[in-house]
Amino acid sequence: MRTVDLIQKKRNGEALTAEEIKWLTEGYVDGTVPDYQMAAFAMATYFQGMTTEEISHLTMEMVASGDQIDLSAISGIKVDKHSTGGVGDKVTLILVPLVASFDVPVAKMSGRGLGHTGGTLDKLEAIKGFKIEQSQDNFIKQVQEIGLSVIGQSENLVKADKLLYALRDVTATVDIIPLIASSVMSKKIAAGADAILLDVTVGDGAFMKNIDDARELAQTMVSLGKAVGRQTVAVLTDMSQPVGRAIGNRLEILEALDILQGKGRDDVTSFICHLAQLLLRLAGVDKTVEEIHANLENGKALAKFEAMVEAQGGDLKDLYRQPVVKEIVEVKSEKDGYIAALPALEFGLFAMKLGAGRAVKTDVLDYETGIVFDKKVGDPVKTGEIIAKIYTNQILSQKELADFQKNVKIDTEVIQAQEILDIIS
Ligand code: URA
Image 1 (cartoon, helix red, strand yellow):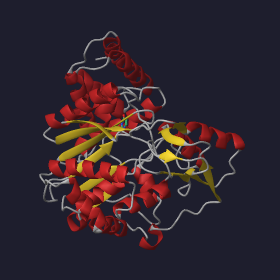
Image 2 (cartoon, rainbow, N blue to C red):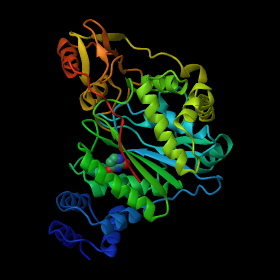
Image 3 (cartoon, helix red, strand yellow):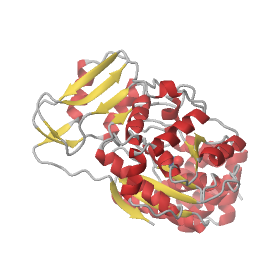
C-alpha cells in the first residue's frame, strides 16, 4: 500500500477500506506516514467526507492506537460527559458532583482549552494545589472511595488523536464532522465509561455554527457509541452566548460553587439539572429535575465537589477566594432595552487576551482574569446599569473597552434565550 494512493482515492471521493484506514492510522502513529501526507488526507476528507463505515473504522483504529482504561473495578454504571467546546463552559464542574451525589460513579478525563474555548483542566488548576495528573490505579481508587474524579487524559490514551488533532489545528482541518466525531468518540470509548452524554455546542462560539451540522455530528457520534455497546445520548446546546455568567478560570470555579449551592442564575442551573437528568437516566436512575435541584440546595452536590478537591490535593481554604487582579472594570449600559446578543466568540477571544485562555498551546494562563456578566441575553437593562465586569491585570485601552461595549447588543424587543436546542438518542 502507498499513502499517496490512499490520499488520491479520498481526493477522488472514494471510500477507504478497513485495511486501508488501519494502515494509514498505524503508519501515522509509528511515523511511517509523515505529517504532510496526513494533512493532505485530512484536507481531502474535508472536501469529500467519509462514509459511516469509514468513520467507524477510523474511530476504532484510533481507540486501538493507545491505552484503553478498564473501569470494571468500579461497581455500577460508570458515566462520562463530553462537550465539543465553548465559552464559559463550566458545566462539567457542576454536573460531575451533581450526578455523583446520586451515587452514580463518574470517572472523567478532561482536556485543556485552546483559542477562545476553555478547558475543564485549566479551571480545576485555578484551585490551589489541585492535581489533574493521577495514576490509573489512584483514579479508580478515588472513584471507588468518593464516587468521582476528574483528571487529565493519560499520555497514552488515543495516541493517534494527539498527533492528528495537533496537525488539524494548524492545517485548517479541525471543523470536519467525520474527524471531530472520530476524535471525540475514540477518546470516550478508550476512557471506558458505560454511558456517555455528549454536549454538542452550536453557534458563534462553537465548532458547529449551525444546527444542521451540529445534528449531523451528534447523530454520527451517537451511532459510534451505540455500535460499541455504550449508551450514548447527545444534547445540542446553544453556544451563541457564553454559558452562565463567568468566563475565566477562577471566576468559573466561583460561579460553579454558586450553582452548587443553589445560588446560580436560574437559566444555567436549570440547564445543568436537565443534563444531569439525562446522564442519571443513562445510569438507570430516574429523577425529576426538582429532585436533582434539591441536591444543589441541600449541599450534597457541593459536598461531592469539595471531597474531590480535597482528594486531589486542592486547598479548600483557597477554594472560595475572590480573584486577585489589578483592576475590575465595570461596563455599563448606554441605553435602555433588552440584551439581544453577547457573541460567545468575541468575548471568548477578549478573555483569552486578558490571559484567561491560550492563543497557542505553550501560553501561560492567568487564572485570575476574565469577565463576569451581570446581564445575559433576554435580560432587561437600564442606562447606567452594569452589564459586565472585566477582571484584568492589564491596562485596557479605550479601543478595547469600546470594542467590548460594541459587542453587547441591546434591542427594544425581548429575545428568549434557549439552552437545550435538541436531544439526539
Ligand atoms: N474536540 C475534540 O476532542 N476533537 C475534535 O476534533 C474537536 C473537538
